[in-house]
Length: 138
Image (cartoon, rainbow, N blue to C red; front, top):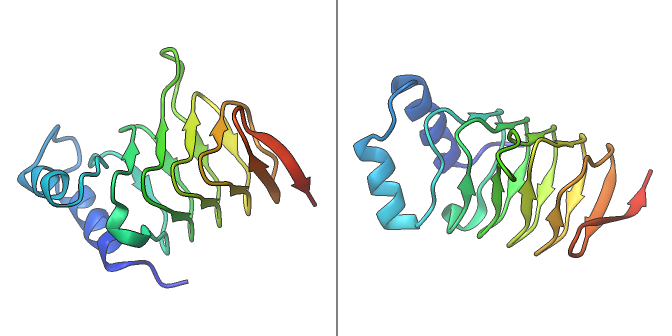
């Protein structure tokens, strides 16, 4: 899967400004696309942010695997001061999904639109609802 140009720009920005809190590029993206993806986020190759990542918010210490797809308004971050999630490879994160806390999302998982995920998700699982429940696991 070819990564979107936006993710390519984010990855280049992350390499150039690693360790900096905020860059002019961060401010530009925040104003133009209303998303917050800090330079410290590790984004795997091939990851896509359809719809220019509108409204996506990701905590600075999140790790995202390869070939993921993260739709608009998704939030990936801390919960109650507990560490950030780790997202596996080939994960689909639907519109408005929230992935919160020190949890692991397994490879090839699908997180449904507006799901709120607060627990580890096994590989190849499909999660929906609030709180997120596994409805299909291979």
